[in-house]
Length: 344
Ligand SMILES: [Zn+2]
Image (cartoon, rainbow, N blue to C red):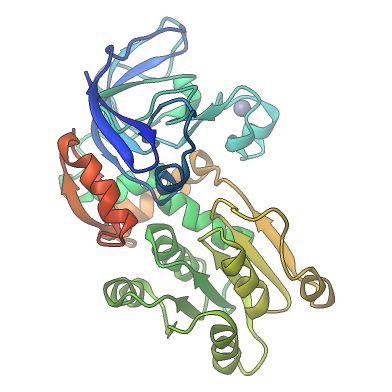
């Protein structure tokens, strides 16, 4: 079968690899009908060091169950499933608490340890706990939005939860990638009254407004902080949804949070320590967040997707086949595309 392999910074290839197959009794084998390229895939794409082992990329997919192991009880051949970016048993203490990304038996797709979803097929460990069966006959037109339940919509929702977004509160979203745009949807869905989008790409800003952003701040750094304060009566926002992961983004997040407010961070951190700790302290700010337990959120978000109340699938602005994947990485890296869908 064909799959995406990252060999080094900027070096992503489509190769013939051994067919995915069942290994453990709790595995399922899934044929990928849709996958995508994630903003987080761009970190190794940009920064992979010489000597690091190759990685089979991809951690978001919708597919069809082709085979199940003898220990799989809730899935059957032919089920249409969505796959969260992490696998989990669904039964341990953390899964019961809704924190599937900390599952004691879990792990992540698209790593050196476990091949990823930008491929014709993949093996799903702990399939009963990991996969979510979609209602049969889900409309073709909904597939893009359903695919975002693998990661970006659940991750945007996690940012909103971690930032304590609530009815009548003010929020700001840092990052105008697919996660940031989904964070706008999530903030509106949870009742935020004012949603400030921090970004400056015209196409992304336009989409953010359609998703519910009420204000846009195009400035960066100190100027951005000042502008957000202006828009919020001088106080800053209750909730900051930090969807980038750089020191600069975190600094801005802390700078625009209102005293007593919260920062929900879902951008993979590329800083050693959280900056601006004095501001954090004196303003009584909360910093929360981490890898989103998207498996826990699918049940909550799915009805809104199925009934068209949210349309996170609009973040996809390019659809390619597997052959187009290397160019898809380039396009997302150069911010030429917001998010690329792959139809193997
Ligand atoms: Zn677990």
